[in-house]
Image 1 (cartoon, rainbow, N blue to C red):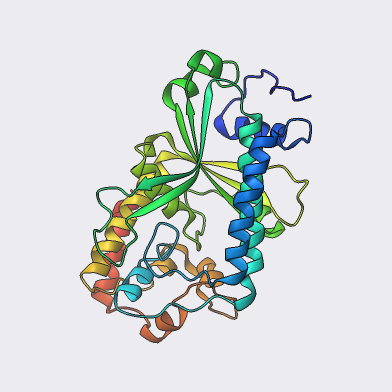
Image 2: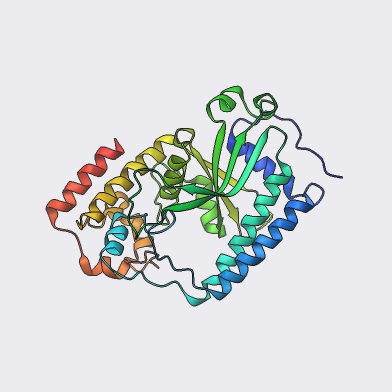
Length: 311
């Protein structure tokens, strides 16, 4: 027999979400309807993952935003490096764990909350209206408090009042990345995959950038590990929004911003950029190496503007 989430005043959205996810995952509490839908949606996504390439052909919130030079190279006609042919299994597992998480949260969420998954989003007004940019996107999960009195049984009054909506993005992670995620200071962490960019775009598009957002890690190497939701502060999202606007202005004017990702993160960027024997995950690492640094004046100008954004 299914049980409801025990009433408990969780101090924030992150710990509330983790409790809901864990409660809903129990075989005793998983709703069969949500589970059936999850299996159906996962099967379609898994099939696509292992039979089609997953290359990005447009600039979108989840692609080509981690570094300003990525947008610059893409708009300049460079072809992004291809993913390995066998990467489909990684995407397939990710889709499955996402769908199970959706079913778990929908099954475990108490009265007073509405859960939307794979929610369609029109991108914000500052997003370039250019055919090389996706003009729509979707978010993993969006939770709205529909009954504040019920919500007060689980969240503090100030959270219910100031954060009535919360954007959540799930990320499946290997054990090493999951552990780093659990400790990362996302106000300055190296974000080589553009997670903050994605959250900044979508939270602004939904009008909730001032609420902050949650990046929820799922450990795909150890599935008994708890969900690891990390709250991303509004200040971090707002800074990332301004960085993106600056990056787009450079890319659309064909002005090379230089290796600005390396400027922001120094040697820690090497893992993502492919320097010093590191693997390198940037789709334009070859072009970036060939281009070297931009002319000194342009590089210093971008660096100064980045510092202004940081402040």
